Length: 141
Image 1 (cartoon, rainbow, N blue to C red):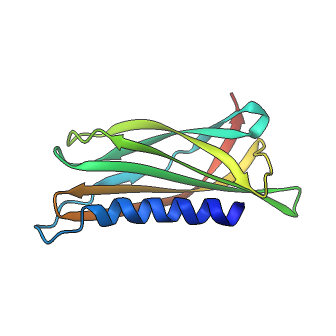
Image 2 (cartoon, helix red, strand yellow):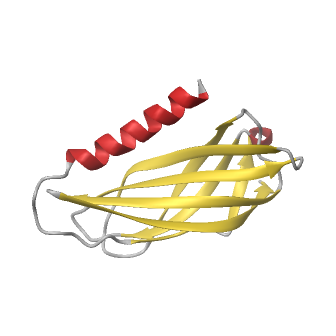
């Protein structure tokens, strides 16, 4: 089940990027900033991240997030989520992304975790991606 979910998520992201890959001028990739903190929901079943990004007006964009956290020194809680589409205005914006616990079905807990955040931007014919990785604190909301 876990492998199938990851395969479907990867296939969906690849299909999204492939859908716009026709020869055309390159676009600006944009910027993204990983948050310092995430809010726990549902006893750790999910984390809400407020992610800051910027992309050029007219671009299509999606924000993806992954979190991993060591639980009890032996287990790792993981999860992913996305916001699609997000607005591109040429100025800094923020979007909330819900990351659902999924890997191994372990809940997230208060404490330090690692997040990897992606911004995928596309114009007609060209797509680019930027990534940010950082430690963050998961806190009870």
